[in-house]
Amino acid sequence: MNYFLRSCLPVLTILLMTVTGVYAQQKSRLANEYYNSGEYEKAAQLYESLYRENPANKTYFNFYIQCLIDLRDYENASKAVQAEIRKSPSDVSLLVTNGNLLERQGQTDRANAEYRKAISSLGPDPTSISGLANNFANLAKYDLAIETYLKGEQMSNVPHLFDYNLADLYRRQGDTKNMIKYYLQAAEKEPSSINIQTSLQRYLTEEDYPELQKQLYQKIQEKTDIPHYGELLQWTFTQKKEYSKALRQAKALDRQFEENGSRVYTLGEVAYRDKDYDTAIEAFQYVSTTYGPNTSYYLESRRGLVRSRKAKITETFDYSKEDLKALKQEYKAYLNELGRNTQTAQLMQEFAEFEALYVNELDTAIMILEEARTFGGQQPDFVASLKLDLGDYYLMNGDRWEASLLFSQVDKDFKEGQMGEYARYRNAKLSYFAGDFKWAQEQFKILKGATSKLISNDAIDMSVFILDNLGMDTTEVTLQMFAAAELLTFQNKYQEALQKLDSIKILFPEHSLEDDVLYEKAQIYKKLRMTDEMIKMYNQIIEKFAEEIRADNAMFELAEIYETKLNQPEKAKDLYQKLFTDYSGSTFAIEARKRFRKLRGDEM
Image (tube, helix red, strand yellow):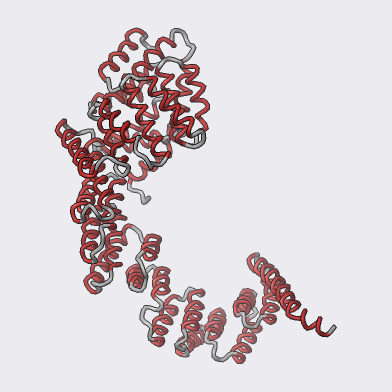
């Protein structure tokens, strides 16, 4: 029996400790609830009990004293603190507790004497230093907390031991200059600059960046062997979207530390996404010329270079035949150098898009994609995207059946997911072009629930459009003419499309499709880069058809033109404001509000 009891004793001890711990947690939660609800007397009783049961836990003692202070029971609070000081004379944090108690009673001089005594009694132990500083910080005595850390660092003889703590305290004081100073000092012992970036991004305002950059320039000169300061300077330029300055810094770091071009390539990608194509081109050019074809980023930088040049030319709608010819030669040079294979298939897809949409060489585009999809080892999603593009180009070239076959193949292979939705949307649009409106409308209705927001929104628009115009007097004939005009636009047959749209106006004046005709003509003028005519169409929609479904589209697209193409921010701002106030239910309302605030100069 004795043996049995001895063998069970460890288990019983653990069980007892577990039960005790759970009980203490429940008791602590109850005490906190009492304190937070202002029932200090009940809270004080529980905290005192918890501290007697757990004398090593100073948190319970501090809460107990705070309860007594809130109750203004200074006599018992003083007795408890003095007893604790006699019991633990080396615990300098108790001097802060006593000083706070004296200060609450109006004895400021005695309180300050206790605070000074606590700091002067400080030893080199980092835990004690942090504990004392935290006690001061909890009382919002940030100067004393800073003094504690500075003295503690001297005594411990460990440089930069409390940099993060000091940075945080200066932040609480609103001393941005010193906050930056200590965050930058902390960067020296970090394996990367990411943590510092995160902290600075959280706490700095736009007005603080000049001070940060000033200190960084000084650090770069003083600490030439630490890359973090150069990285942080590059980061500040990127935050302010000054990508050309960021690139200059990235290239300097790449050369100084003999890197492989990765940081320059990454910055090029950021600049490209933010439509700073000149900087993106310079970044990709640097990587592709500085590092040879056998290096990690050569292939992607060459592709990024062509992609950026294409975007610069095509997205501005301000290009000549010579620009297109030069870009075509660049695509060819890239593919001649690196070959046509799995690695270059993505660029082949982009080249085909360029040939189809900008050069109108549909046969060439089809030939490029037919070759690209024969390469082995490609991801199914990518092959599906090739088929979807190829189907578009066949349709543009007049081969409806081949287009439908390709769309149906993707639909069959991707019953779930966005690729299948893209294919089903294209097949529904194809039926719409062919005048099979009822079947198309049913498909668009199903696609309203698509996982892709883009497909869902487009499907809703098409479903509503067909439903509104189908079955009205003579409307089906008009809708057939309009769908045929849209197909001509899709096929880059712009003049024929315009003639078809004009014939609708002549044959069916004052028809309900008039706003749609104007909108389609605006899209054609946009592709033809006839900006004045495009603006004229949008304004007619806004003025004459404010209640129709094309009004918010026209308003948003016109505002975007004024903002991004014509550099007329005031006109853009007025349109964005009208859109989110008068058309609050529009899918463009949220984006319009964001752009309005940005143009107004709000901090985003």
